[in-house]
Structures are given as C-alpha cells and as structure tokens.
Amino acid sequence: MIRRIWGMLYRHAAMYRRSWPRLAEIAYWPTLNMLIWGFTSTYIATAHGAPRAVVAGGFIGGVLLWEIMLRGQLGVTIGFLEEIWSRNLGHLFVSPLRPGELLGALVIVSAVRTLVGLLPATIIAYLLYSYNILALGPVVLLFFINLLVMGWWVALGIVSLLFRYGAGAEALAWTIAFGVTPLACVYYPLTALPVWLQPVAQALPAAHIFEGLRAALLTHAMDWRQFTLATGLNVVWAIAAILVFAGEFRRARVRGALLAIGE
Amino acid sequence: MEAIRVENLTKRYPHTLAVDGISFTLAPGEILGLLGGNGAGKTTTIAMLLGLLVPTSGRITVLGRDMARDRFSALARMNFSSPYIALPARLTVRENLVVYGHLYNVPNLKRRIAALAEQFNLGTLLNRPAGELSAGQKTRVALAKSLINTPELLLLDEPTASLDPDTGDYVRTVLEEYRRTQRAAILLASHNMGEVERLCDNVLMLKTGRIVDRGPPEDLISRYGRENMEQVFLHIARSEAL
Image (tube, rainbow over all chains, first blue to last red; front, side, top):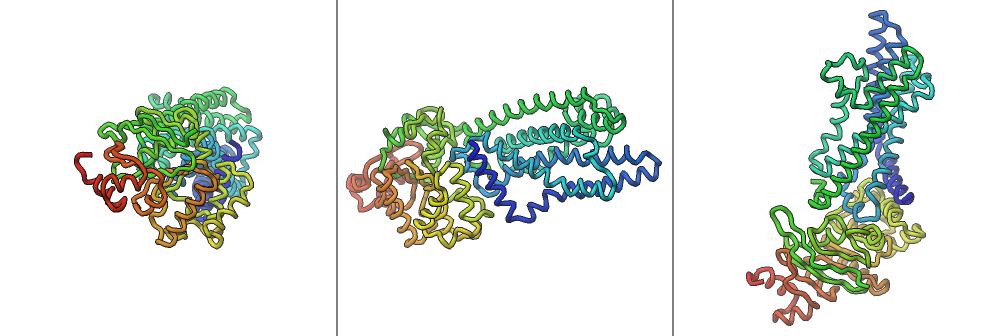
C-alpha cells in the first residue's frame, strides 16, 4: 500500500517539477487575495478608526484560513483531474492501486500544495500588514486541520460528481467551494446572515471555525464549543462524502463510466 | 489453472445488450484473439476482464481469482495496453515506468526498466517527456509499461495500431518471445488479421455481443473455405445468418 501511494506521490512531484505554471498557480490566488484583503483591512482600520489588530485579524486571518479550505479542495480535485486530462485513469484503475490509495495520495499532495501555496501569502501578511497568524498559537494548527479536512470532503463530493457526469462536471471543481464562501462566514459573524440562512451555515464546519477565530481575536481565548462543533460536523460530512464516493465509484463501474470519464 | 475463465458473461445497458452470455477460457502460454467489428463487444469484454466494468451476470476468474471479489490480487499479476489510453505527458518515459513500477510493486525496478529499455529500444527516449514522443514511440512505451510487472496475463487492445510495418513486426516478435519465455497468456483484440494469423493460437469471433465462432485461425480459414483471416472476418461480419 505504502509503495503504491509513494508511486502516486512521485508521479505528482515529477509533474510539478517540470511545470512552472502549475507551481505558480498554487500560490497565485492566495497571494492575490492577501494583497486585496490586506489593503482593504488597512483602509477600513484607517478610515474608520477601528482597532487595526482586530480588523487585520478578521480579514487577513480570514483570508489565510479560508484559503486552506479552498487550496485543500483544489489540491485533491486538480490532482484527480490531472489523471483525466492526461487520459491516464484507465491505466490507474486497471493497476493494483485501490481507490482509497489514490485518494490517500491526493490528500497528501493537497496538504503539501496548501502549505507551499500559503507560504508567500503568510510572509506578505507579516511584512506588509504586520499580521502574524502564528501569533494565535497552537490554535492555528487546529483551525488548519479542520479547514483542510473540510476541503477534502468537499473535493470527495466533486470527484463523485466527476464519476457521475464525467469531465463535463469539471467546472464544479473550480466553483463549488467558492460558492460555499457566503455561508462560511469568513469575514462577518453568523448573525450577519438572514435568520433563515443561519441554520444552513451552522451545518458547515467553516462557520464555527471562523466564529472561533473571531472569538480568539477578541477574547484571546479558544472557544472550544465552536471547535468541537466544527470537528464533529467535519467527521459527519467526511463519512457522508466517503459513502457517496464509494457509491458513485461502484455505480460508475456498473454504468461503464470509467471507460468514458474523460469525455 | 486457466489464466482466464469466463462463464455466461453478460453486460446489459438500459438500451443495449453489449455482451450476451459468452463463455471461454484462456490457458497459460496461449494467445487468444478477440475479433469482431465495431460494437461487437470486444471493448466491453476487456473492460469486464480488467474490473473496469461490472458484469450484469456471469462469472470471471482471472489467474484463479474471482474478479467480483478479489480483483486487486489478479490485477497485480496482469497488465494492459491500449493506444487509446495515454501516460502522463509531462513525465519522462523513465518517470512513467518508475510510477508504474511502484504501483505494481516491481522488485529491482532500475534493472527492470533498463531491461525493458533495451527490449523496446527506448534507451534514447528514457529522459524525454512522454508527450513529445511520436505515436509509434508512445505505443512502444505503453507496451514497456504493460510488461513492467512481468505479467502472467497480458490484455492488449490494438497493440500495433499506429506502428510502421517494421516496428509492428518487431513488437510482434517481442510478444512471441515474451509468451514463450514467460509462458504468459495473452488476450489480443486486433483488427490486423495478418497479426492475428501470426500470433493467435485461437480466436473468438464476436458479433453483436455473442461468440459466433471460435477456433485456431487456420481451422476457421479452412472451415469457411477462405484464403486468410481477413476474408473470414468479412464473411462473418457481413453475414446475416450469424
């Protein structure tokens, strides 16, 4: 098992080594987002006399953490799409590589991509806006893991849609997670949403993570209730996503969709 | 133990009966041709043998393993090549072979890749990206990939489809040699009837999902009173009665 996962990791490492556009793409959006929201938070803090640390923490911290989810999701789905684009899935699925091992490799690739992609944005936040996300302490790691896991189960859902609808569903890989952003309450509190929409947002781990982040910024204390809710929801959604993936993979083998997934 | 045992295999889609109750066996060291026109059921049959497609009914046993329950054990001992499936274009030939060597848990991988490079004359191509190769070179690389794990069973879909006659002949010689030295079983889907006559011990003639005839190529040629397999193929393909 480990050797097969290693084989897939080697495959992605070899690809990135030879493709600077792919490497640049990893860091491009997080860096761009950081610049936009960094200047926005500076402007708001200056124009409205708001405490700079809280504004910067809310916006810049929000950008950095939300990018973990987005990059985590894209890392898995792009990794899977790479196999569709290179018409290599047929070879992989007739090799001894189990679907779980393929996903395991993609999850590791996604984690590395996320760390590498966020490094420039984290440095920019520190140098340009004097914001150090690591100052939050070990709590950052808990946020990081939770958001990464959320990105993975969203990705698993998208890969399931690719099994069902083929490469025609590729656009979902780029759009679904962005579509979740309004409900994630990254830049505003849950109460800013209409009352009828709040239960929907509360069903997502992200809303609890960002409520926890704001609480940590304002009170300098971890809101363990929000963290526990986020973790519990992640477990439930991850199990649901795994079941959906397994079901769609089985149905794809029945319908013959694995033969035509690139079309 | 047979390399392949297929019993009453059927694949039904909502509007099509792609494979209709076929049965056959493939012995170790045998080369079996799977022939038929477009839509005859060759690709569907191969996909079911590889575990890519779940049969509607029937049973497939590959190298003693039931493909419905234990396909990964069988997949580790077999391999597949088709010009219709590619290898990652950005990776070099060597990197592609390393990836598949890991996936198939190949021991002494460096030595195995060197042996395949020599066998398929890939020495100068090893460090070139797979996407930059000509169609013929890609086919040779795909065949090298299909032998990376020294499979006991090889499934080949049009193995010489885009090769010039010289390279095609070379590949056929390699396959004959591989079958002889490894006593490997080979299932070959091909539209090249000269290739079928040269390589196959037996052929299955498929039409609309059913096996309409079977036997050694020379027997079929004589039974239909024809001069070669091409004429037998055309006769069967155009015959309403079959």
